[in-house]
Length: 490
Image (cartoon, rainbow, N blue to C red):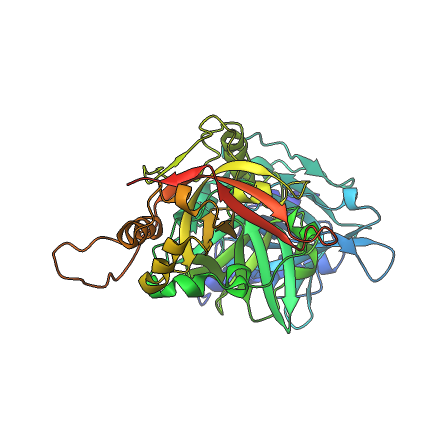
């Protein structure tokens, strides 16, 4: 049975057009033997198998993309993988069928190696590999060079061959120098840069569709960088609820979101493959070749024409690394605070020893009323203009501040009874304007001339909040936040 794999390839005789012609004749010979029903276990490059579709072949390839197991049109379950090798880096899809999902290939990580015996190459608009459960078989191996050579999953009919170890080593050695996919750079949310093109490994928490446009809510356990704002004039624009959230999420969806780490929205104006599977909120994925930008200080991802999505196993190396990092961060009270944040000395709070909570922890708290100490930035205020701030000296007005941390944005009010305490006991026009500029990150003029600043960078401040409701018949719908026990320093 192994005569074909043991026999050395014949050298081209004199008179042959080229060595390439001799290789082509050898490929055709093997394919014709397979078509005639003769057992042959010689692994062929993917590119060679495309020459004569409809025959049974054996392949040794790398899994580039992992599909989701679904019901077929019949009684079986099916899953589709995309496999690549050195001869065909664009890859080819391979479709598997089985009576149970446990009998389908369960790939741990993209980049793992798969061995396929007696699969068929078919052409239905494009070439694909079809696995027939009656006579095909497979084996899966880890991608790591240091891993064992024995497979971590095999189908019932699979029998390894004596040259498998050598081919597996070749595949594992080839892969590191030939990274899969379109990625130029893999980033985490904490490393986002406007205008860059990158890959993002993340968990898809929620998917929303509106008029043919898709929004993916994704998370990797890290915080997006804090943004600078262009000018004080955009303080009012930042406050719009529509701009704050894009499309408000129902509370039952919001309560499924992690309380530490940024949830990024990725926008696509076209249909995305595998979107139906990602709507379940259980998948990790690699978003390939996407870009990002800021809108009123909020990061958002954007699909490009070349962008695509690959589902990942929970055992994928990138997924495991991110979960370990998140678990480590979540176990440490200090590390749960915003990454790269440096609390300023702009504000004092009375409850220094109170426990820290993120804004998302409070927004998803099981009770409407909730007291917390949090580390936030004041990204907007109303009133925000100097002429309007003068009215605060009458003590008849309250202030609405827009607070943000990496997990959320929300409005919080300084009620008129607390305005004096909030500003340290002084409500002169000069004091109010100066302290509000500190909160909003408006730089002081470097000289005596009044020059409008180009950017502002609000500082991180400790703040005490309490939530309450306005209507007992609609407690969650009328929920508000109040700032208390917080004073702005001179």
